[in-house]
Structure formats: structure tokens, C-alpha cells
Amino acid sequence: MKPRHQPPRCFRPLASICFRLTRPLWSGGLALGLLGAIALPSRSAETLRVTWADTNLDLPVSVLETFQKTGQFDRGFGFLNVLVPETTLKEARNALRARLPLAPEVLRPVLTNTDTLEIFLQQVGSLIRPEPGESGAAALKQALLTASEQPQGLTLIGLIQSFPGPLIQIDLDTGLRLFRQIRALEAETGAMLKAIAAQMQQQATVTTGDYQPAQRGSYTVRQQSWDWVDRDRDRRVPTTIYWPDRQGLSLPLVVISHGLGEDRGNFAYLAQFLASHGFVVVLPEHLNSSSRQFASAAAGFANPPGPQEAIDRPQDIRFVLDRFVLEPQWRNRVNIRRVAVIGHSYGGVTALMLAGAVIEPEKIRAACSSVDRLMLVPSASLQCSLGRLPRDRYDLRDPRVVAILPISPFASQVFEPKALNQVQVPTLLWSGSADLIVPTLAEAIQPFQHLGSPNKHLVIALNATHFSVLGESQGPATRLPPALLGPSPELGRRALKQVSLSFLQTYLLGQRQAKAGLTPAAAEQLSNPVMPLLFSEQLPPAAIAQQN
Image (cartoon, rainbow, N blue to C red; front, side, top):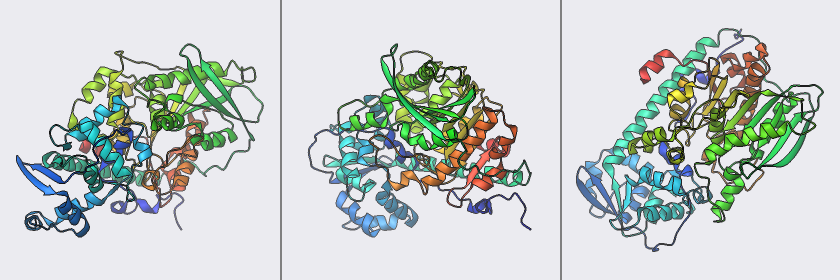
């Protein structure tokens, strides 16, 4: 007879663990660091100058085009077919043709933002440059947008073909060093995920109580929206509230903070599900980083959000909590002293700040001083822009926040380990193993180790991306390529609903039996071959030691 609690089949054997590590890691980070085009000469690059070991090799772009089609160099460059190892030739050809998951509408708003553009140029400028005297910033912006509009999408060969000016230079030494670092990170990430899976396999044999995934709750869900204005900051905070049609006082309160370029609608599905189980759920819209703001920025009618948005977002939530209980129908009906915050991406940073993580811009600037490090952090252009905040320290802890659930937050450059250690409230950190924007190792696994809470949980959705948990937007949604959405967003949303409910019932309502939904046995129930789940409360010591 099959045991009651077995790890999902994809956990066995460990060598065939079901996750993807998308290569190269830095490619997805361009989506957070680009936008806006300017007029430049329409001529495109004719020659690619490869710099390697103090040697320059001028390669006609037409020869490179032939190579990416046939896998062979011709027209006087056939010697490369002999000198370069076959495996390197194959990797180079694949790299030229690989489609990067970046659409023009994703790129356009961010390239006009000087806070992120300069940092992005630091990331890419050391690897790809125009000929001396040409504007690197202008050239990169034009080439990226032109290449992304091609029918085949954004590829490296398309980027080279679209580069303005007769000459484009690539520093092969930097590229090879970056490639080796990326491969090392991939190996390190894979080893950690396998170690967590092995740990789960051992723990899942221990019965921690019966667990069955919850259906939609029994309460009818009501909804109401307000267009509140924080007069002290002259800032609108439109807010939608979902609540259960039930009697009683001190109802549990949850706030959901959307991510950059998103809106309230993206998590309406989660709010409705939680409200059907008895929670009052508040969804504020952070207008300066919402989907509407991004659409306006893409059209040239508004500026993309600057670093001040990181400070405004937690203040939005503090304002909403203050304003909410002034409404006559909600006065004394919710427990305003015990609030949980769920946040996606930028919203995850918001949740961490409300729970006690402090931002210190000077330390962010120091962390962002290494160009090599920037190249390995896809979202560095956004994270490092917070180093431009004017004050020395930002502590926006709110004592009403007693539990947080950050979903794919970026943290590696924003929060020092000491800052994360200040987060003492129960925390569930969610990450997708195929997240190109905030990679699992740097932005989830390593920050998780530093969280100070004695009650912390790490959930990794294998094969999930940064956007695998998003619902439908209420605003002008950006078209995301399938590679960014992941294999099945429906599976991601379903898993997030179940995990969120178990976490909130455990730590906001104090229902001990609900913790069964945060165990390896629950992971078995919630996993799917397309998107298995890894649960961990403490990372495997041996894997941590090997990482250090």
C-alpha cells in the first residue's frame, strides 16, 4: 500500500528534479532597467570587433549572420571553425539565436528613467560598446527597441544588427568571465534546490496532521472601492476592499501590495479567495508604480517611478490602515492591531519594510559599486537606484503588521543581512525557480537565511517565473511573453491561494492545525508535475556550509 505521505514523484530521483534554470540570468533584468527611444542615424553595425586577451578581431556582421544560420564561419574566417572548440561554437550559435523575453512595451518606459538607465549602462556597457565617439546610452536604447520589435523578438544577433554606427565592440574577456560566473551560480542554485528537495523527502515521511487543499470558503464576498487622498503627502491611494458577509467584531485584516507596473486587479483573485474564508482584504493601488503609470510613461506622458516610490509605498499602506477605520461601517469591526501584508515584487519590498527591514542608501551605493556584481543581479538597475535616496536611513516599521508574505521580492542590494535580521514577525517568502527578474538564490534563498523571525517559511515553486502568480490586470496591462509567464499561471495562482490561507490562519488567527498546510506533506498535495513546490523552514546546514 502506498504510504499516506510521499514526496511528489518529481522529487525522485533527485537528479531529475523538475526545475529550469534559464540562461543567461542577467537577460531578464533588462526588463527593469530600460525605456524610451531617440532619433539616431538609421545605419546599422557592419563590423563586430571582439576584444580578447588584448587582441582585436574584426568580424563582419554578415559573417556572423551566416554563422548563426549554419553554425559555420565562412568568407575567410573558416579558421575559427578549427580553432574554436565545437562546444563553444554551439553555445555561441545558441546564444546568438536565443530569444530574450522582453517586449518593446516592457522596455520603453524604463529607458527614459535616468535613475535606472545609468546603472543599466554600467551593467551592459562594460560588455557591449559602440565605436569611440558614439553615444553608448543612445546606441543601446535604439538597438534594444529596434531589435525587440523584430518578428523573431529580441535576440543577440538582432541586437548586433540593430546597433547604430558601423562598429560594435564586444569585450570577450568580460563576457567569458560573466559566463563562468553565471554557470557557477546555476550550479550553486541547483545544488541548493536539490538539497531542499532531499530534506523534504525525509521530512515528508513524518505525519504532521491531515491536510487537504481548501476550496473557496463558505462566506459570500462583498466589495467596495474608495478613492482616498493622503492630504499630508498630496497623494491619491485608490483602494478596493473585499470582505466576508459575516457578523462579528475584530475580523482579521490583510493588505495586498501589488508590484511595479501592476495594479489591484492582479491580486483580486487572491483577495476574493481569502475573503471567502473570513478575512477582510484591502488592496491599495500605488499610483506612481501602477500599470496606468507605466502605460503613461510608455506613451511619453509621465515619468517612470523614481527611488522615492520605495518610501511612498509603505506610507500608502500606513495611510490606508489609518483611513480604513475611519469609515463608519468598519470602525471596531476589524482587528487593526494585527495586520498581515502580502506583497509581490516591489510589494514584497514594501512588506519587508513594514515588518522592520531598514533601507540605508549609502550601503546600497557600496553594494552596487562592483560592475561584476551588477551584471549578476538582473534587477540591479532598479535596486541600485534606491541608493539615490537623500536620507541616511529609512525605518518604516509599522507595529500593526504582525505577519508578512513577500512574493518574489528583490532584496540582495536593498537590504543588508542586519536589516533582514530585524524582521521578527512570522514570514513566508515565495520564489519561482525560473524567475529571471529576481533569481531564487540571490533574492530568496540567501535573504531567507538572514530573516530574524523564529517563524519563517520558504516556498519555491519550481519552473515558476516572476509573473506566474498574477491575475488579470484592471489597467492597461503590458503584454508578457510566455517565457515570462511560466508554464501555467493558473497552477501558480492556485498554489499561492492555498499557501497564503494556511499561513494567515496559522499566524494571524492562531489556528495551530492550519500549519499542516505549510509542511512537506502539504507540498505533496499541492504540487503538480508542471510546478512542484519546495517547502522549508530551515535550509539544509550542509548546503549552506557548501555555499559559504
